[in-house]
Amino acid sequence: MTSRWVSCCCASPPSRLVKPLSSKTSDASPGPAAAGPASPCVRQCCLDAQDICLGCGRSLSEILEWGPADAARRHAICAAAQTRRQSRGVR
Image (cartoon, rainbow, N blue to C red; front, side):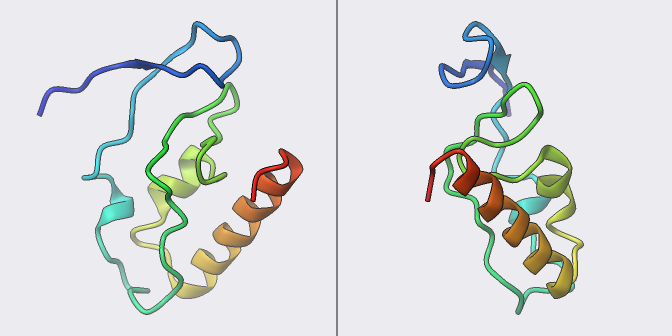
């Protein structure tokens, strides 16, 4: 699969190029917490200067951690992402 870079108009600075996350990241594979909360991914992946996804509000490390995370950790990640989205005025 060829990776491509896209311009993320919402990230700062505007000319920053970001690599879109593929559907084959750890986010896509069920881990030990398959019965835990569903991924908050909204398929609008664009990382800002702090490596926070402007779509779902998770940090890059949280996105990569999602697959192997247990249910308690997934709930914590979802709560942190929700707080970040609310602080930006996004639901």
